[in-house]
Image 1 (cartoon, one colour):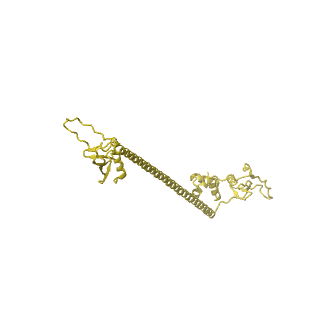
Image 2 (cartoon, rainbow, N blue to C red):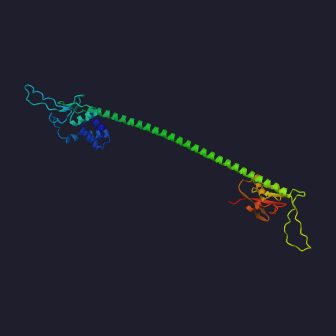
Image 3 (tube, helix red, strand yellow):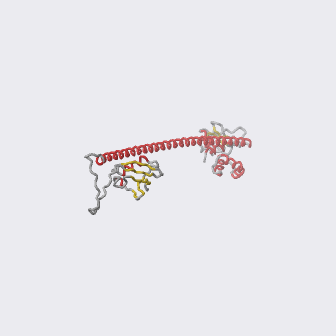
Length: 329
C-alpha cells in the first residue's frame, strides 16, 4: 500500500486505519478517491468502530520508543485516582497521536524516535480545517498532475526530436547509397562502352588487315598476280565453248535500314560479309539493337557462318540489295 497516500490522509485528520481501509476499498487509486470515500462513509466507519479504549502506561509499555513517565504523586485532597493517557506525543516535534500505528507511521516519516504518553486529547479536525486540508491536497494533486504533464511533454518532444534525427540520418544514408549505386552503374556503363569501342576497333583493324591481304593476293596486278580460280563446270560437248566468268573488282551494296532509309557502299568482292555488317553498325541511323542481314530476291537470311564468306561467293557481286532486320529475341 502506498505509504505516501496514507501519510496525506493522516495529515488531513483521518486515522491510519481509516486511510488504509479507504485506499483498499478504492483500489489504491490515490488520495483523492480515498478521501471522497472517507467523507461519504465517515459516519459508517464511526458506527462500526468500537469505543476507543483509554491508553494507560501499562498498555503502551510494549512500545520501546515511548517513555514511561513516573507515576505522579497524588494531589492533596484528591480522590487517589491517576489521570489516564489520552494520546501519544512526539517529544521532538510535539505532535499528538491517537494510537501506536500513527506513532510508527510518524517515526518512519520523520525519523523521530522519542515519544511519551500525554493526557491531552488529539482533537479531530473541524469542517473548516478539513476543507482547508482538502484544498491543499487538491492543490498538491494539481501540481503533481501539472509536473507529470510537463514531464510527458518533454519526453514526447525528446522522442520527436530523436525520430526526426533518425529520419534525417536514414534519408541521408539512403541518398548516399543511391548515389553510390548510380556511380557504380555509370562506371559500369563507361567500361562497357570502352570495351565495345575497343572491340569495334579490333574488328575494324582485322577487316582492314584482311582487305590488305586479299588485295595483295588477288588485286595486286602484274606478273605476280595469281590467276583467278576457274570454277568447276559440268562437262559439255566439245562443240560448246564454256562462258568465262567476268572478273569484278568492286561490288555496290545498297543497305536498307529498319527505318526506311538506305545506305550505299562499294566493297571488294573478296571482302567477307562481316565487313558489310561492321559498316552497318558504324553508320546506321535507326537504332542500336541487334540485327541480321538478308536479301529479298531470292530471299535468304544470312546465318553466322555466312559472315565469314566473301561477297562474291554469296552472290552479292557486282551489286546487291541487303535488308537489315531486327534480330529475334
